[in-house]
Amino acid sequence: MSTALKEQIKDQLEHKPEDQKESKRGFSLKRRASKDTQANFYRSFAILIRSGYPLPRALQMLGNSTSHPDLAACIRQIGMAVDGGSPMSKAMARFPWYFDAVTCSVIEAAEEAARLSEALEFLADATEMELTVREQATSAIAYPAVVSAMGGAVLMGMLYFVVPQFQGVMTEAGVEVTGVAGWIYALSTFVQNPIVPIFMAATVVAGFIGAWKWRSSNPVSFYRAIGAVPVFGGIMEKASLARFTSMFNMLTTSGISIPRALELASGTVDHAKVKRVVAQMKANVEEGKTMSEAIKGQGLPTNFTDMMALAEETGKLDEILPNLSKALTAELSRSAGRVSLVAEPAMLVIVGVMVLGIMLAFFLPYFQAIAGMSVAG
Image 1 (cartoon, rainbow, N blue to C red):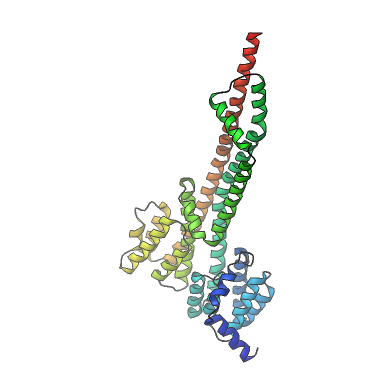
Image 2 (tube, rainbow, N blue to C red):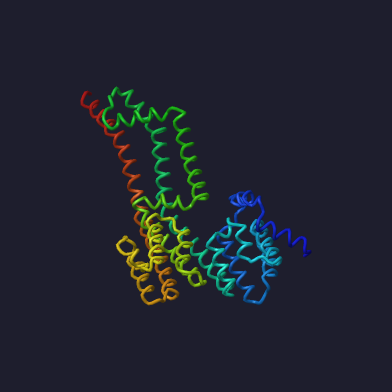
């Protein structure tokens, strides 16, 4: 590679005025590689480093072998920057849509401590764990949402197609419909307006698209909002604690100071209460107090409170935090399973009761009309 080209790449990755424009383009969802792909990159990179490959050569190989074109291009540019003399952490920082502040801090600490392969393994494990936590938390929410949507579609179909048939029969029989049945008939008449189903369908689609974009562009506020829901708040709290514990362990093991590690690890937290507790933990450490003082009385899971206090008291954060992260992840999986186990029959019962109520509202007046005709005859 020519010296001029090296200088050009290095200049692009360090102090280029148009960096903000490039960063915005990098956040495009169509171009972003998945978490799985990123984890594979970290793990493959660690293997090459342990095998003795120089950094530029390892990055060049990974850039050529990575299937996702955008991530491959980023890796190749990082490799050229490193070959030109730039620290890898600074080169990675130019692509924040893949390598956030936590990742770059871990790489920077690993470069200083000559523990790059270990840090890359940590990043791979943390990325896979984050993906697992997200999937478990999302799965607990998805089933009730799907059943609710299907139940709503069934009810709309009944109001649109079935109720008018009963309404016609009752009108021909000269039966006056009152009470709940009257309300249902009025609602059915309202739904018959062509604008209403179109508007409702457009609202649902817009809501799903908006939620998807919100989750993609600002996951912290999205999951914070979900965490405010009573049923799912506990799941989101455990998910945040599991991610925080994993990141905190990764950062402290990589040689980053505890206050700085707490500050960086808080960036992975999307639950308001957990984020507040982590901020207080950092303030306590800076004031010479213990982290466990900030955790006590906050209503967090007992295993988190007890094990954090034990780790701080014994000074064995590097031994206790990995076990705590595994325990929290296992508890999260059990909690998500319990919610799904309860939500499935509960949602079916709710939808069934609603359908039964509508059917009874139809049939009772109908049977009463038939009974009246029989008596009159």
